[in-house]
Image (tube, rainbow, N blue to C red; front, side, top):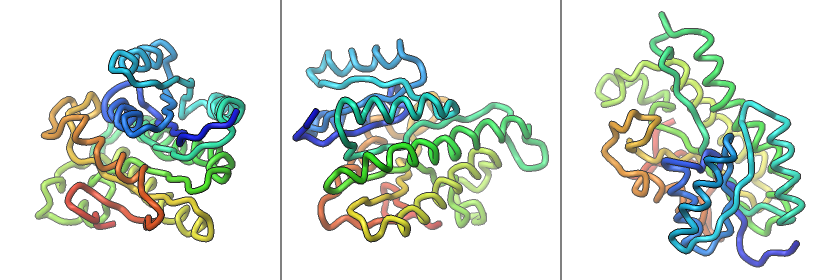
Length: 243
């Protein structure tokens, strides 16, 4: 089925920043696919956007279930024939995460399996569809907590956030961005890591100082980069982030 508008998949888009990214992309005229583990929550998100006059549809995708990732890729190929934008937004935290000396290893494993391995698996599954687009964009949702420089800077406001699982998972996502940008440098696919800022979501315990809509603005801007797009960057609302 041929589409003239851009096609975007946003993972973890049933709530929080992901839902707002989906909303803002739909407002920009993009055909949005809401990726979520729970079909009921995905449908509720589609209904939420529809109530605002925005069209979207859902696909089940669980970053720890590689069969679901393959099925999502096949469904997108069958319905749309390509993918123009991939926003790797889905991610988790775990209450048993913590400093390296006492973080629960199983919690760290769960976080890495979703935030890094799952993001890698989704990216690999969607790359053939992204290659079919005239100028595809990949946005990896990262965090200041994934910066080695920030983690090593006692003057940073995030220096005390010792979460070995979560921080390491976002550092690994940044490595994915760097290596994938190099791998794709002779293509029209652009990939960047975007730190949205400290956003009030379930993931942060609603303790951030930005709304989800504010947090979605920068990821959306990078999803919609034009022909002069630069690849392989790590950015935050104030500019470039230190690796």
